Length: 436
Image 1: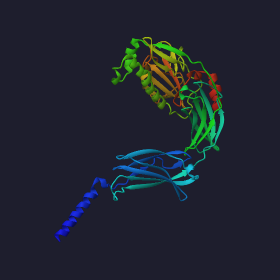
Image 2: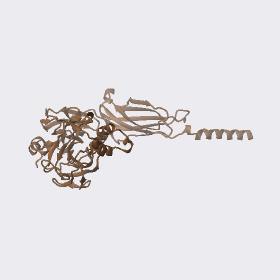
Image 3: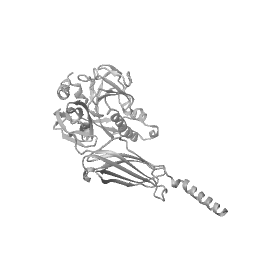
């Protein structure tokens, strides 16, 4: 009897040891999709989030429709992966699936030794809708003649299923703003042809929630504009007083040439990326009225697109392309807001120094840089001609002036057009059917 009890005790002990060992973990993997309802087009990307405390082993994804199941993705994970976010490309049309309701099945297994080494398995079914039909698209009006680095406008109509729309120029996307109308949606967009887009071909693009795209080439005529080339000599004093002051602590030991290269290239890239990211989110209404104002009594010292070559001790140490107007007047002169809007940003912006950015709505913003000081705060409504700061030489500036930039959907365009009421009437307002 004692032997039987002892044997049972040992058996229970061994069972308990194995039952509670971490390798016999019994919690199932977790599966989630960010979207609550999912439409899948002829080519769609879905995001799947997986998590397991012991470790993920493999994943399989299926689409099931009318009793037919098609595997669309599978992956086996390296050892030790506990969390994974995947972007999975689906092409259901190529699998002979049809439009309509379907199910997306996601199965994942972990590396636990539970179930005699088979591990824990989770399977989640997500209802989806297969949609292979792109939105209908109709071009209404557009700016026919546009200068290189200049701006234009377009109006187009789509069917109600269009979820996102705009103008795509090379790698740049200019957001369009919707207005619900009878039998569809009317979209209006301000866009540019800046050299940064690496193309001058523009297309109207409308996309539905399933990712289906309708595209229409915009038949505009691009006009050339002469680009100015400048050589700028960099002095030792500029290196010491301007360049080194812009370096982060871990870069203070760089040589003069390396320091200039870092500020002119790396820091400029960081600042421009920050500005672009900041200025893509705009008020969906037009706030501006009429032509934009130039800094009073100012002279244009540099134009948009100027190609600059920097020389130090007679040697080329860098290049840049100017993305604004440089306007000079008396030192510490009042800087006025070029048009009605809302203050989007105030602060020190690296090479641009003290900077104010104004949102004028519809993707249009203006930037005022190298200020000695500002007189406004973020979120403040400002009026055309209102003083927002004073000129200065902060940042990467060689002297007191205003760096004045215009941006559409985060991309810089030539500001000079926006100062011209005749151009504004003919190329923008008449296209948008806006009366001011």
